[in-house]
Image (cartoon, rainbow, N blue to C red; front, side, top):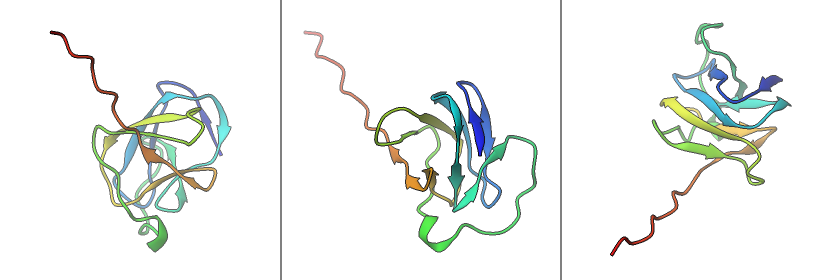
Length: 101
């Protein structure tokens, strides 16, 4: 379990993925590659992502849960996929800007 708060940075222990929390508060289980994420700079990489959690993350993309209560920004891409409390997080779709004619 990690304590989410906007601005908090986390890293994966099984791949190169790093994220920063954009939205969300409170304790929850944030995982990458099937293993819990840890505060950035607090652990070395050990192991590999599990086969069912190895879709990868994309640099600069925002990931959110289905309820839109938590949102993270990927600051370093990796091989593992993100999940919140066991549910996969999806890349957030950007909203098109209105035409300015």
